[in-house]
Image 1 (tube, rainbow, N blue to C red):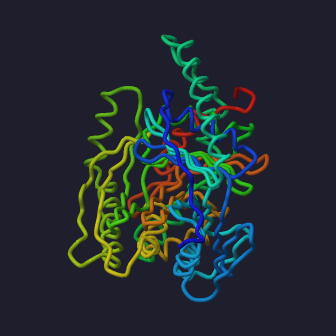
Image 2: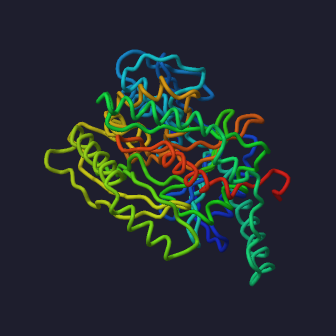
Image 3: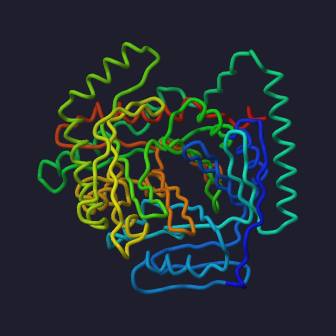
Amino acid sequence: MSHQRHYVERRVSISADPIDLAAALAKAGLDTTYFVYEREGEWSVALGAAFELTADVHGVHRLDPTGKQSWTGGDCLVAVEAALASIPLRGWRAYGTASFEFAYLLHRIEATHGAEPLLYLTIPQIEVRLRRGTALVRALIPDELERMVDFLASSDRRHAREMSDVAGLPPVPSPQVLPVTVLETTGAAKYKELVTAATSEIAARRLHKVIASRVVPIPAPVDLIATYVTGRRQNTPARSFVVNCRDLKFAGFSPETVLEVTAKGQVMTQPLAGTRALVSDDDENARLRAELLSDSKELAEHAMSVRLAFEELSRVCKQGSVTVNEFMSISRRGTVQHLASRLSGMLQAGNTAWAAFQVLFPAITASGIPKREAVDWIRRHEAESRGLYSGAVMTVDHDGAMDAALVLRTVFQRGSSVWLRAGAGIVAQSTPERELEETCEKLQSVARHLVPSEFAS
């Protein structure tokens, strides 16, 4: 359409590590909305907001400089699609978040919601997609494109000089702000009670599995961008991200995706369930791996998750297209190793990525089985609302593609409050002591890389 705006683009060469340039771009956008999202070797950086879209219990709302439009009534995700289709911009990519509590709306669970939107999407004013050796710079205003190309070039030169200055030197260990004993003891007694409550409901056959989580406050201010860079160099996530969105900042190393949808309609999901620690000793890791692969409790928990994922995909995919592409392999994710499977299918005609999102969100491995009952159990039993923890960070493209990372292994910051959160899958054979230990193993993926604000350059 002739009235639609479009991005101006330029591809440039880079020599620095994409993660360093992504961090530099995020720092440059500290006073505005930014998303850094890593997927399969590409760091995408979104700066500023040309269009914003929010969804809550009252409807879907699109905001831009011309004002606000709303879609109310009917299906929420149909309204989200309509709002995105109304955006007068070619070639857009939206970046956003879905809180765990969005599941209450999708699964029609009566609940009290706060003021925060349950779904938030932004289409940036400036976008940079970084890969090893190259960067694609996009902007809605030509002058902003030139400014960003210049900034990227200067940052690239500076990081190249810094790397040459420190070549051959050992890496500097990251400062620690949280002793391991804090992870082991904070809320431990209440968490064990939560696990016991969950196993009681499972014994009563009201649930098969539920993920119970706990919060660990951080006593010192943290530099989120420095923590992200430090932690990413030591983690092996499926996706990673650092975000400044509204009044919340967070950085994380997601072990799995909620879903991945291609422009051609292939949808994939990647449940991880079953956990053992990763340590510095290879022989011990091999022993723990063998233990994981032979543990009846872990195997049953994982198999239940894969079965439900298969059923969910079958609801939106062509008959006979759903396949288990990978079953019970081992994925190494930072300080833990998981049983991992991958499933895929082709969307039925008329279904979109949002139809897949509706059945797959929240992730089985962050909610439970049956999903609706598990989500409601979490609402009733956990002391704090989850917010983005076990929700999703996502990208949505104009051509129908979608990529949504599960928000785990993440540090959150709102105002002066900083916290971590971790959970474990509770099944009939669970014990409070082992599930608490598992949360500690997961928390270490982030906790050992926290960089206090005073240490950041």
